[in-house]
Image 1: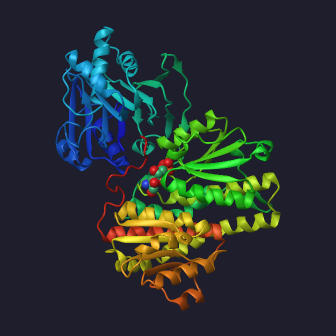
Image 2: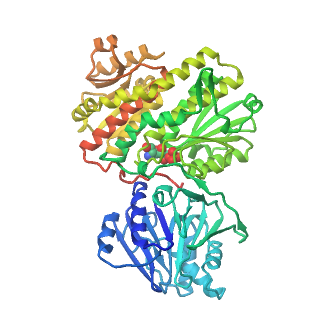
Image 3: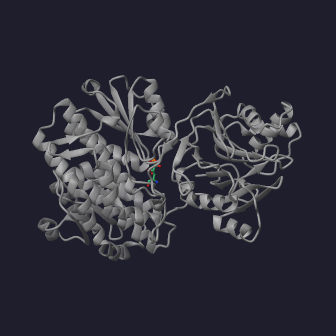
Length: 614
Ligand code: M6R
């Protein structure tokens, strides 16, 4: 979705904006633009398509200015075009605005502004903001941008993160946030504003995450933040431990592939310091829930969207199995609107890579309104969701740039695994030997992933056999049912091949009608409590001439005897942790199919990295 970057300081801003925008490309966009203040004039350059087009336009231009804002637009109101690209200006071209989010009342505002004589040049909702600021300046007889923005946002309904510049207030950027993420970067005699950390990570790791209803004024010398009553508020500066290099491709063809290969390390980072073997123990005190509170929990609800929801299903299963607490899982957009039965004895666990997914944020708010306790499993420090909950388990994977979630998902599995064991030990329902075995299994996972990654070429060979197929079915049972969903989601998002994930036991209740000699069925067959049942499902597929691609443990004689079309072997581990190894295999398979089809793997069509609107 849209991206914002802004800078005010002593350095030339053109490249800072372009490089920042490039770091936001992964969010998905269809046009881009910048506005730079140069000697009392605003230089505005915008274009449809990729940032490379914008770069071509301004490459040879000498645009020497030290304050500017830039934007990548993901079209909502009005088609992707130069006129609809941000920044947008007021009538006189003295005020420029970039905006993420949706202004819900823009039609009525536009009508009113047009009646008052304002001339609009785009089809966007954003343009009303520039004209509103202009109107507020003239109505309040002020040139003060901060004051005018404060008055203007009072008219807006919906979600917004905005950054504006005015020629009447040079060296100043005013930013405002309501339900759409916005951060401020603190440098030495320079300040940044951005919608996402990677945009400014090469310049500073000291970051303030703005809250909803806040307005900030940035100049090279200082940053002041105000609430909606224009009372100055203090803000916490956080140090983001991410290394800027982790936001680079480092020789890989795609971020997605790099992120798949990072998993041995990211999984280790996620459990490091949170588990010990001697004595076997889980340390999740950062969750900030007392042992007494844990004993009082009567139910746990996992919520998330997309891939994070799949991690939630694993969370439900493992919490019930290990902590013996009834658990549920819900898609955040369903949970928030279905009047869920939660109360002070419910623990809601929100799972989100970005911490900015609008539906998940609102679902957490809904749960808290009803008195539930809420914690988050999240990858981005200081993101919106982490500020809505009482405790956070951070997945420490570094920035995930590929739109298709990979390393964040496997880290989320590790997080729900540790959470279940932590709750189970606090409740006294897990035997010490069992805990020790489970921790031991987890410690082996990074090395086991490496053995899968080494066999990437075999997965690529199989991808060659299947990449022209039009439909895929993915089947798994119990812990590996969500992995079937995740495998299918990965394939469809990056290759645009239709794929469906199903619990294997459901195949007979409908999807079996689809099976013929053209239908590859990916079956997760690793050793588990439901292994024999899965073998029967494979027989059923074969009886209908379906193509079977199995994921299995080496030396699986029974499977080899049945005879399937392809087998990807993965190391043996416990049933719950097999989900991680099977996932890595399916990520590589989806990646190579998409690569063979020539798809835009890191920025698949129509998708956005964080879905910050409903
Ligand atoms: O940032 P979040 O984890 O909250 O994002 C949730 C989903 O939008 C995300 O997992 C999406 O499904 C990915 N494209 C999956 O690869």
